[in-house]
Length: 369
Image (tube, rainbow, N blue to C red):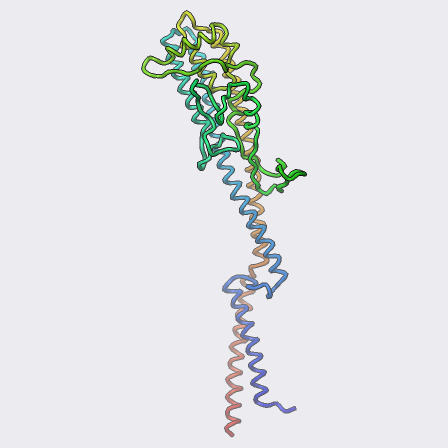
């Protein structure tokens, strides 16, 4: 078989092209630190990497959401804790002291303090996180708690002390706001309601901490408006209150929420010595203690949710590390091996160039002969 110069050149060019491609492939692995840069290089590995990447990004979204929810829960916990401390202060210190051998002037000081704490409780119940009212259940766009013209507490515009609103208030208190954090989100058979165990419920209503829906009595028919000013607090309101709630009946007409009960206790303390009802005030203090326990139970409930979320975050962080490790094994080459292969391919490429120089030089001299 005759081997011509043109045949040698063609074979040389083909082999040089393959050597060059081989060098470039290993060079890309070293520079990009990836086993492949296109699907056609390794379809199986590319498919696996795509699947792992989707899982990693989804887990990352869940983790970011869970951390944001944890911050929101921390804010809820801080707000309810403040309510717990206020209720404890009302019962354990201020309330008891106000009944121990005091006269009207002294009781007026305690009444002012109670009203001040009442206002602080409302502020805590209207706390916000990231422009969202965190104690408003599933509706965080508007402040949930306020005082109406009669000085009574309202929730979303409905009077808390009105028995006619009990059903609606209970519905708002128990409503949920579910967030998908990777628990396997599912809907019920009709598809219009989320199965609660498959998502995280971030909704919390301040009613859970300060409202007793089962209270048999209510001061709904009583005005609790308290005038404030220099030595004028309660002068008119105290008289109006006693007219509507005769002496001795205050304990049978107690407010069904912590805020209104503070107003009611303050009005009882503002009665003159002849109309002051120690027994009703003492009964209200006992009710304040029950509200303190209720708020404390709500705080515990938030703590349980926070603990669950912390465990979920730990799980997602572990999952993130596992997915990142798996993805690295598929996508990232062993750099020691990659550099070694690149060095060998570079050596082969350089050798091919030298052979080419010799081959082409001889062919040119043969042609000249």
